Length: 557
Image (cartoon, rainbow, N blue to C red; front, side, top):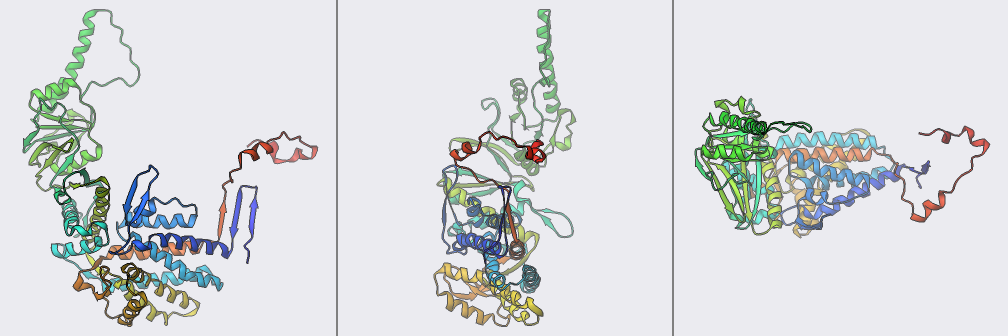
């Protein structure tokens, strides 16, 4: 049936009816098919050309979709899902798109049979509640102090990534970094802020095995006067400032009219005294290192170097916050507000080293640092960028476990268990909602099916065998080993997933599918671009008739 298309005022175009549902479902399936092949450890890589002409090689779902330029609004909202998943839990970006695409795919048959979208959404939401209940049932708790279990979990989560070939290295770095910056917020809960307090520094050259987590902070800066200031200090006293150590310029243009020659020297002396006074207030606390986010004048450098103090200027605000967390200092806004408690004494060593062509300042060996830097070394920039993306995912997984220490089986086992349980429950669902509910149960099988496809095994045989094992909701830990395509016990193979990643993926996928199903109108208010000749033809002067006097065109907007 041809859907009615209503054209309003030449620029507003409206489409409605089942045609919109089909268009949305097709667009969502197209997005899911793009990244379907990147799910699992034996997945394909994608090579992307970005706007600047650079090349990105990755199999991270979010990184691929970020580079896509799509026009369809439904496809745009699918891409948004992957970004949400990445920001919330940092992993499962591909699974969430594949699952949402499948949920919409199974809904298409019901739309054709004239089921109302609200009925389908109700059934889907019921299925989501039951799926989360099944997750709670099969989840097992993990001991955060058991490093081997943590390592196994992080490894299985990044086993699908490019860096899985480097063994435990990335998982070790991720666990070290996240346990360093974890802060207890009471009631046995811990808060881990990855973006704010973990900095990843990529330095091309060397080997990937040289990468390490520093017990402190590394910044891409040298001391202000390398010849006069010390580049290595043991147990430094560190002062952090948020103000310039130079003479304050006027807010607006200031003219000073001097009549006598001596007044000029008085003016200069006042400036010098102002800076000297500031430096003396700082030197009163006997610091070894002064770091400021703003400028540092030559005169201030002279006073500081004369007192044997090293100085670093124009440091980023974010880096300054990390230094403060690492060495226990407090960032001060004015030198006259300095107190002894603001001085950071937690660092064991300040040193400036040259790596490659650049100088880096290290503030390391800190006592109980709450911020750290991960130093990544590698052969090329492309390799380092991919390692950084994988490390971010690994740190997110480690953070999720620290916040919610629960595991569920990986390798598609969770989805198969959820699917089997929902199929059982569907017989007790009353009314017309029974069929969409059952369809949602079948849609969960998309994840193990895609894993099997990407391993290159016989999909039908493997899926039939798996469904047989999961038939009555038993064997919850039987799934697919993504490397070999064998059916195995996930506990023995140590293939696990974080509970928060799975529950977030289910919630995001089903809620997004419901949202897209509820759309029955697309109204576009964008004017189509005219060909260059067409515009000139229309711009002829028009003569107003008497009858046009009442027209709204008379009133300028």
